[in-house]
Length: 354
Ligand code: DOR
Ligand code: ZN
Ligand code: ZN
Image (cartoon, rainbow, N blue to C red):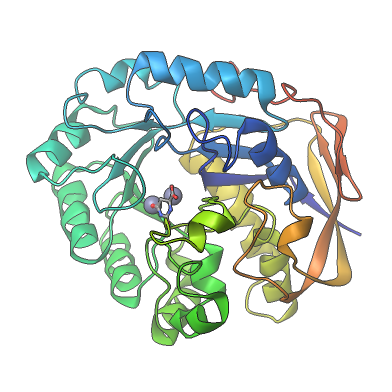
């Protein structure tokens, strides 16, 4: 048996308020525990998006009633909320800016708006961006110019990770994460997964991009699932929304990579615990750990997952390493496939006085 700290997933979409048929705070945080994550940071592209005090309170109330694990909630940058958002900084996981088209209406195209948010959001509070390619280069430039710490979500391409690496070497105040689907899938997998189901932003990339992520892992700060559940009916429909469920498959994939010597256990703990805790300023979860059977070899099946998505792009993949038990703040919250904590057991990590 291997014992890990309670892992932190700094990037999940839990769909509540607004799309609980895809996921809600109960099913999403049950998936987190089953995947070995005792804390999740939830993205703001819900319906309505979390861009003001009222929707933040609504999301936190729902989370408080329903979450099985600990959490914090991001707020979203909009075209006209740059001056009001900072008043929410203490209650939020951080601020999220969508600089490219993804899922939902939150997108900032105008660089003047980026600048305003970079300026106003407190410099010591997490600021995350979804930015790809040239957009990422532009946001990175602005972060350097404004000496503004910025965290880059789900870096997926060789040009992007090399740019971030070079900026870090020059002392730029930036951090980044990569997602398991960009580490373990490429565009070559699209025919097997199916074209609608393969839709994700950033898109699945080339083998060379995937290799660059592995080769530059020392420039990567965090792993983040970017758990983005949509139903199979939607993914197989006429306008498939982008996104993969990922909370329950991430750790088994990482552990399989450890087993294949692509990664060592210390790096895994840095990427899934130490670094996200530092970057997002999260309190310690006392008496919290994850037990893993590191020898269990098992096939991933979508129908076995706790996520309401009920499918996975990793269908049928054999992995080595299985979460057998999770203890959160002294309580046994997951054992042998069953989530044992009650809805509402989870704490808002931003409400804990450190
Ligand atoms: O594929 C994605 N899905 N990328 C995003 O940035 C958003 C996410 C979602 O919310 O479904
Ligand atoms: Zn994104
Ligand atoms: Zn996302």
